[in-house]
Image 1 (cartoon, rainbow, N blue to C red):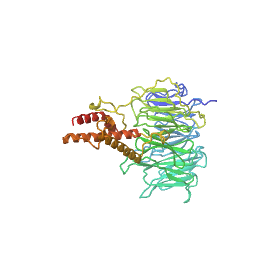
Image 2 (image 1 turned 135 degrees about the vertical axis):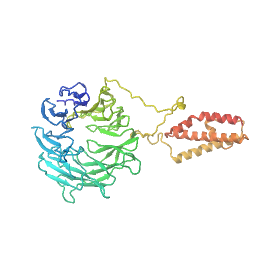
Image 3 (image 1 turned 45 degrees about the vertical axis):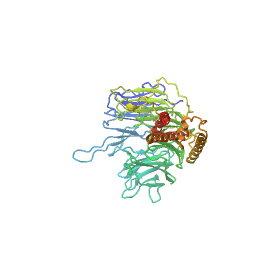
Image 4 (image 1 turned 90 degrees about the vertical axis):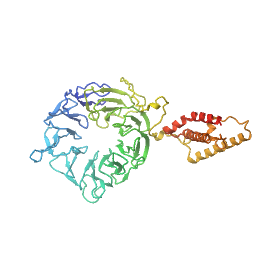
Length: 585
């Protein structure tokens, strides 16, 4: 039986509703539209079979398969919802409040049994950051950070703490995905000159000096992001400082570290300086992609030895997204960039398409590995809100624009478990679409009035580097080395000198020099007797010689700057001026 199409959930000023996924895009009958602006939160279970949402009065839970209401909890202030991996527990969080007399507030983190609807446990969780407990995939272990300790519960028994991991000032932890044995990565920030460190442990072996599977210490870290791969064999750590003391970046300074569960660790050497925008693991767990460096940013795929496997060159990008099957990679530039996307076939490192999703604030792969969702949501942008469904070949299959007086707050796919959708062969031909394609208007650079009637020169602020498999091969139009250029100039100077010697011996038979050779005939020149005219002639020849050198560099494949291209355009005028002066001699 073929899997059903993932639903699309939309939350905005028009209410909360669901759409059938591709190819229909009609409103779904699974969930009756909830009108009004009171819906603050919704979530699906990990397998997409349960759906919970808050309407400002209650938190409701329905079964997506049979459309039946399972539970309704009286939690009007809840703003965060999360299901446990096997749909056993629903976690809810609301802002923590204290009473006026200063006494402690009531617990604001509730854990409900999805089957019976009873409250299993309530905790006080003051911060919204990392509010939700972390479960292992089989729900045998559940962990939460409490006062710089990690508390572990087993089999959803929240009345008994089964284990504790205590280190001085644990700031963050991440539980590994996948089956047993479970691993946990913990981050402890540095203090009093001591470095920060990340350690990996295997549950429940936390005691003893050699209990840690791996340890990586580093300076320059105010906060870290820890990313496990799917097989739980390694963690990538992005260490960030709030301030770059060198003044090179407004966004602080970032470094990327690799820590393997077998104890190996390394700093990932990134070839270009600048911020690290995004790092993402492939679902194969054998490689990861990093987007980094001052704009235009580089993107590179690395293997588990932290060696670069493929370099995508530079471009306007700040994010990377692998498809659920790991066979397609999208490099994109969202936020303060124009929304350009590059869709790559990861196996063959071949570019599939280059669509543009202007003003996008959200991107998500469909669980089927074929379709892409991009959206412009409030409050990030309050104008031109809406969403688009794309095929990875670049075709827009469905588009919805919110009315000008409305807003779109959230849109997402219904999740499915891995393996439900089979991997399909990659196609490079754009799929047909009924939605008319909109070519984004190219933003033209400002031109001052004095230049508006003159020809436009093709110049770029940055020289973009092509992907490694698109760079010119050796032996083709490769730029000459410094020595080769020097020898070439010597040869041309000798040739010019011989020509001049011939001209001196038989001036009547001397051929009329071509305009291009004018700048080179600089050895013997007639003088006018007027030092001002001689000086002008000398300067003109100097300029023409410089133009000749620029033309040689352009022929050798070098990208010229805007002012250099403008110099070349003035060549004819300079030659004419030189001829006029020399005729007057």
